[in-house]
Each structure stands twice: as C-alpha cells, then as structure tokens.
Length: 141
Image (cartoon, rainbow, N blue to C red):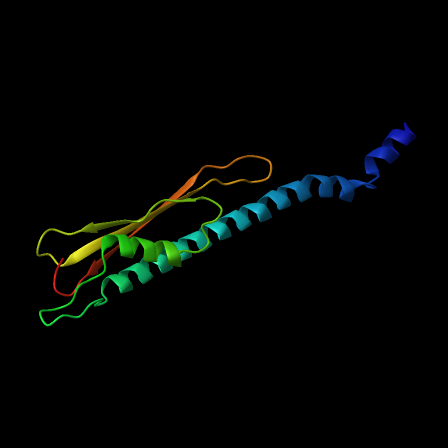
C-alpha cells in the first residue's frame, strides 16, 4: 500500500511525457506556418507580375504620326510569365489578357495559381488564388 501511494505522488518522467505530446503538435504548427508563408510569397509574385504586365500594356511600343501601337496580348502574357516569382511549388496557369468592349480602352489581366498544402502528418486542402487587374491603354483597344 505504501508503494502505491509513493507512485501516485512521484512526478518523475512527467516532463518527458509532456514533451512527447507537445513536440509533434508544435512541429505541425511550425510547418503549417511555413506553408502559409509560401502561399503569401506566391501571392506577392502574382501581384508583381500583374503589375509589370499592366505597366507594359500601357507602353507605346512603336510611335507613329497617328498615335501609338500597344503591345499585343501575347506580348503582355509573356511579360507576366517572365516577371512572376514564388510559384514553383504549385501550378501557375497561363495568364489571360482580355480586351474590354470596343472603345472602352481597357484590358483585363488575370492569373491563377494553385498549390497543395502539406502539414507533415496529413495533406491539407488545395489553395487556389486568382488575381485580376484592369489596365487602361492610351488610344483605346
């Protein structure tokens, strides 16, 4: 009976048990924070590429006496693809450049990125981010 009472009051090894329970949970949380950081980096890269594509779309490529010729949609898409960063961990789809209605003078640029999440012990949901930017082109579209 005395031995049973001494076992109930003995706290040796409690820290090891708490550590064995806490460390895996902490590791999963830290890795999850890393995954969120990667998603934010991809979002930042997408925004940067859209900004560069929008800036490029407003340039006067070949000045003529009657006005300017703007870059083609394919050239704008290529510029966006060249300037994107942080999307190596997922699928960066081909950017789309859509002309507005005739005489509206704008183009709509859009990009989409999809990445899977991994939390060490289990797979998380896929994250899909779409960013869109409207740019007004001098001289109309």
